[in-house]
Image (cartoon, rainbow, N blue to C red; front, side, top):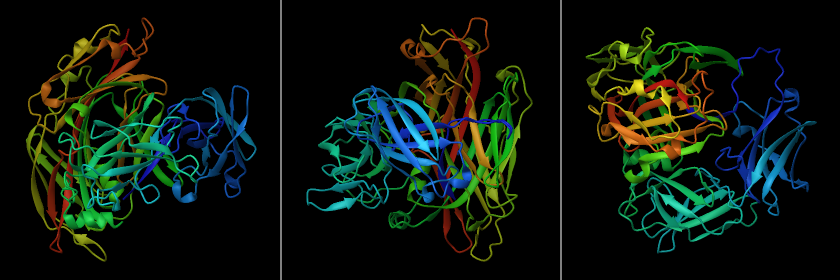
Length: 575
């Protein structure tokens, strides 16, 4: 399978007759995050939607200007190559002049005779990190002076000098690097000569035993006023090859480092309690697309339980996405308040899988049986939804009860270029589905008081994480290409709305969100409808996923990563 990053800044069910006025989004050129800010000399990514003339995309006239304090600056810009795009062939890169004054500015994109403007704020620094890759590799140099690319088989170690690529450093000459959640001061930071808009940051890996060792250790950079997006690097205590927590072998890691692909399957089990959902169909580039969204205004609660099994070939970047970023406990747990800038969905576009598991696979436990079928290819899915009830406490017992489960299949027949699996039956252990125990007290939120959220902590292990999300628009959002693998679930918060996220050990039983964070939420209108939501979700934190292997008919085996998640979401009034 091949994942593609898709930026969605509006979702509309309007008919074809409705004219959508042109608009642009402006994001950091490295992180692709829309913060509303930019630094002098930084690279920007500008997306125009919709296209003013789709027939003219092969011959495009573009220009970008910025107007701060009445002085107009022209910008160096260009169209991104077709290979970098998915749905929108109208993505533009532009480099801000390094002489821009700080303060509000109007950025204007001229595209085939159409001009669209957007206000941004020019600040001292607005940093974003480029994802590691062929163009922007993370490099490390040891005491022997040997320069290496950071890889799974060549991790960084204490004492190594690591070089990162970024944009938006602006006037900052030093930065704070957060490696695995631990802070260290950069050794050097500045623009790269001959590469407009590109910065480099260097730091020395600390000899700190509390920094995790893993194939995917989180790394972010702080500059005045902003923490960058997070990337991952491979890090061990002695520079030896990292140990995969996803069940991949040393040979698999070497193959990934060489740019190849390896076999890896995912078994995702999900239980969602909340407002009933509906499926909206459409076609994009001739592909049937399905968007599953909450039904607006429908009362009551339903439990939707589903599972997806996806055997696939993956490259290094996809393995990093599946693994997630590892950080130290005290950096991982806690609460964060922030304002959202839009919606981003990390997606997956299916390509043929070389594995045949037959027509169906099965999950069976004390709560019942769920059959996962693959009507259009080797990507298996199954789902059931309960009747709607007025209170989540009135829901029937869940299908995915905590305890022992079995994942089984009869095997496939194989064929030209396809490896069949042998019959299998694998034991699994599922945690408890999450439900708030003080749900009644959480219908109205006082912005002036601490907010306590409670749940039953029994049945959760050391790797289970409870995330409380408060504020904005609550709906878990599902996006899939019909008949293919589902795209990742994201929690949507409307642009400009504040939200609070808290990560806690699921075994702790409660979290107290400070009034200082709750107070950032927008109050609702007295007597009006709920204006925010609370969502509880449980997942397994990176580095703590269950893994197992399935036998293949050629004598090898396929590693499988199990991810169980459950959530409960409900509307609230903020006052």
